[in-house]
Image (cartoon, rainbow, N blue to C red):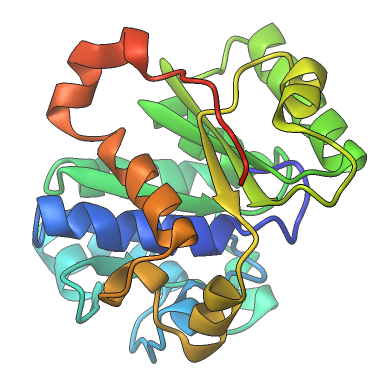
Length: 249
């Protein structure tokens, strides 16, 4: 989740899915819940035969086996529910339909990752209501940090903060005039993972190959791997160690 667009939600979501598939092959599904302008398919170089509107209509909502046949498989070992081809088609998907689909998927997959649209629309709130974890993104800009502070405050006021929160500082560098401590002071919670600004991430996005799908190691992939490890079963036993001071190189 993120209050604004352009913060790398889809990049983080696709890499999180690919990374988790290494821990739990064929047990991860990624749902593109940006119903109008989702680009999970583009980020993964997929040409899906079926998209989100297909999975919430017809027989699929009543038959989980039928629904599973409509998923799109990716070579990394994850399954996907890609967004609609046209915004008008995505507009027909309701928050209730998305909730039902997420319940279906959670009955057969260990990890269900939802890439939401920016802000707190019906679909984002529907996903949050069912979520065990939320990954919140911001970058090293004042508008982004203030936006996330407001988003967290709204969710807290309506009792919709999931049990576990992960704050990701994306596009981090030391040239913005702000430090990680400045961002933490603004949003009011610790930063858990900082993903450094990297041309390799931009290149991987443009190629449609998540950086965690490749074998090379670099600071960005190391940070994304750290996010993945927060979802390992043993991580729950180490909650007291999950919030460490983050340093941007």
